Structure formats: C-alpha cells, structure tokens
Amino acid sequence: KLSSREFHPDNTVVDVDGLKIGDGSFVTMAGPCSIEGLDQIRETARMAKAGGASVLRGGAFKPRTSPYAFQGLEEEGLKYIRQAADEFDMKVITEVMDEAHIDMVAEYSDILQIGARNMQNYKLLSAVGQTGKPIGLKRGIAGTIDEWLNAAEYIAISGKSDVIFIERGIRTYETATRNTFDLSAIPIIKKLSHFPVIADPSHGTGVWDLVTPMARASVAAGADGMIVEIHPDPANAWSDGQQSLNEKTYLKMMDEVNILVKAM
Ligand code: PEP
Ligand code: MN
Image 1 (tube, helix red, strand yellow):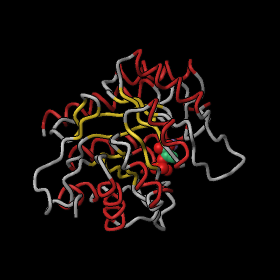
Image 2: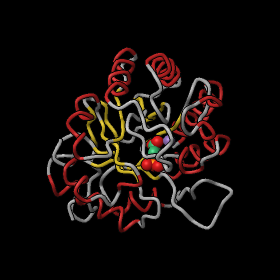
Image 3: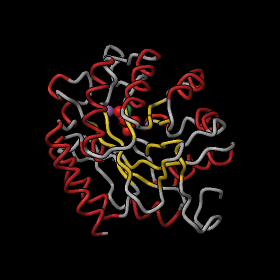
Image 4: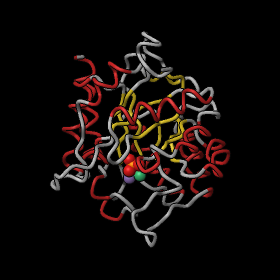
C-alpha cells in the first residue's frame, strides 16, 4: 500500500508551503474550534503565535451533532482565518465537509482537515487527494487503526496529496472523557505508515484540564506535533469551550511541551 511503511521505509516529511511536518521537529497547530468573527480569530492567532504555534486552526464548516447548533461562518470565516494567519505569519488548517466546497476551502487554507465523521467518506477522501494540499486526516469516531490506514490510502492513491494522521480519540464505554484518547495509536501509526501523525488532545479528552497532560504524553509517544483548541474566552466560545485552553493555560502547556521536545 502507498501509505505503508513497507512501500516507503523512510518518513515522509510533509511540506506545508515551506513548513515541514514529520522532520523530527514538533509542530503545534492551535486555534479556536469555530471561527466566530475577525476580532476573535485575530486575537486567537496572536495567542497561538505567542505560544509558538505555526499553524492556525479554526472551523468555518462545523460538523455539529445538533442541526440547531452553530454551523460555521462558511466562506466569510475562511476569509477571516486567512487574514489572521497571514498577519501572524502562520499556516491555516480548516475542515472541509463537502466535495462541493473543496475548491473554496483550498483557496483559503494550507492543510485540508477531514473530520472524524468523514473518515470513511470515500468520495470526499478521493476528491481532496486530488488537490495536492496536505490532508489532516482525523481518526473516525469509532475508527480502527486499519480503517484509518485504509482511509489514508484513498487519499494517497488518488493523486498528489500527503496525509497527516490526527489521533483525536475514539468512542468507548468511558464517560469521564468525551472520547478515549488512544496514545498507543501514535507509535502504531509511526510503525505502519511513513506519514506523520499528530495528536489532538482537545477532542481526545473533551476536558480542558486534561489537554496539557495528554499533550505532554503525545510528545513522549513520538508524535510529530499536535492540534489544540484555544480561545480568548473559553466560557463564551460558540463551540467546544469546555475543552479549550485560555491564554494562560495554553502558554503554560507550551512551556512544558517545549521542555519535553528538547529532551526527546
Ligand atoms: C474539530 O476539529 O473541531 C472537530 C470537529 O473535530 P473532530 O472531527 O475530530 O470531531
Ligand atoms: Mn472542536
């Protein structure tokens, strides 16, 4: 298989318009769950950059459990995140949910995110694989490692795009956390695939004070980076505030993560 370590023994270093992922460095992607407006995404970009993140995250198309919940600012939001990232010299990762929106999302972003709910949307995977943009592939809500690797294969086989695996936790019987963050998936993916893997301790736990310990653990487990949700005012975030770090807790996490990165 094209995405397997057997086919390609050396690590693939993903080039995100000059930013390298999978070269032994640890890349941080940070930002709000949802883009809420220009001021909010600019302020969050400032925070993200102050902590050392090089990629700004934020959703403009949101896969919400309830159809009555905020669904995202769509193209307006994409314009805001691009503007904020450019101001702070950052790259953009944002989710694309629909084949019809791929060209639009690709115009404003550097990495296309496939959300957990779309990990097995095979038509979408094939279509994003033809863009040539790196694809951040979230693990499905109940995705096995084998299903996740096969999803990556749909992207790899269809064209020019590289894959960045994103471990974001899976559904188990446990209710103390939103998802069960599968730390072992990190070294398993490193063993089975040449593509980089990053951790999403925010969706992996769903609880803000568990994010930092799992971020630290991700470094130790060998992740190539992480994606974390941060917000200037988590209590008033439009989505996922309960798992978002504020400026103070985010900066503290980054100090701790940097100590571990240096020690690795
Ligand atoms: C997100 O990144 O905000 C998101 C919706 O994540 P997931 O697809 O992992 O649930
Ligand atoms: Mn979220």
